[in-house]
Amino acid sequence: MKIDIKTLVKATLVSALLTLASCGGGGGGGGSTSSYGPTTSPNVLASEFVSALNTVDGTYSTAIQLYTNETLRSTKPGQEQWFVIWDAKFSEYKAVSLNYVRSIVYYDYYSNNRAVASEFRSIERSDVLSGRANGDSWGNDYEVVDYHYSTGYYEGRNSGYLYEDEAGSTDVSLLAKEQEQKKFFEKAAKVSFVYNVSLETSMSMVTLGSKIEKMLSHGNGELTANDQAALLGDLKSLTGVSVEEIQAAGTDSKVKSDVLAKVAAKIGTSSQNLEQKFLPEVFGITL
View 1: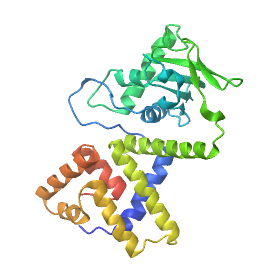
View 2 (view 1 turned 135 degrees about the vertical axis):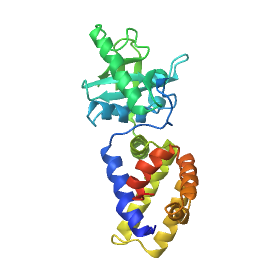
View 3 (view 1 turned 90 degrees about the vertical axis):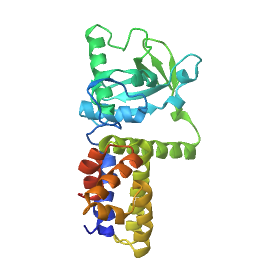
View 4 (view 1 turned 30 degrees about the horizontal axis):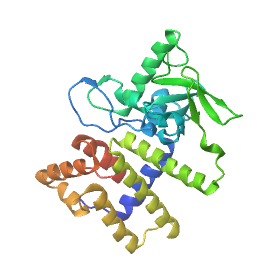
């Protein structure tokens, strides 16, 4: 099997990472195959949860307004980690406990972000039908919040807690930097969700995709020999194997098994997902 590095990185990686990460997509979160039964998502991030909500709801405008390190409630003794979102499904602001999201039990074959988002909506629907339209009774897990323009704070309808809004900061450069960081993590969370890989891997993928985009823009749409040599090293760092090893896997079943296991362990996914989705869709490689 011959792999053209120019085709590999230009035709597949850029389009897969940059286009898809900007638009979102379906799929499952990180996890490995197991038997069907009760499970949780103990490591899901707020950004991953919101991305999964968008997929479940069929809308891509639900977005985080305040992260857990930006909310006043998170800093109070005895309180959990809280974040605030604009909930496009209900057209309202909502504060959610990340600890609560991570404790939600759902039934599936493996831990995944879509399932926890779907179960959250199911619980929320039951609350609404029971007359609790603003969240759980005391606002201990999640609640609708109102934004007060006069004070710049979000206020919980059930709990009465205030959630700070940092939009009033006068440090424009700091705000711009924070927005860039948020965009990066949101993009990485989408890639992680779509390709069922670890967040660490998805961040490396987004970084590599941006690097390739810059290379292409500086080279009039073409990769130089130096660019290609540099990217070979980046690809090996990302997958844990060389292009030569991947080539050998295409002709030797034993090598293929070893390579798939090595790459799966490196990127945080299953060998099945690696062979059927990740390699074909990201790198255009079919073993």
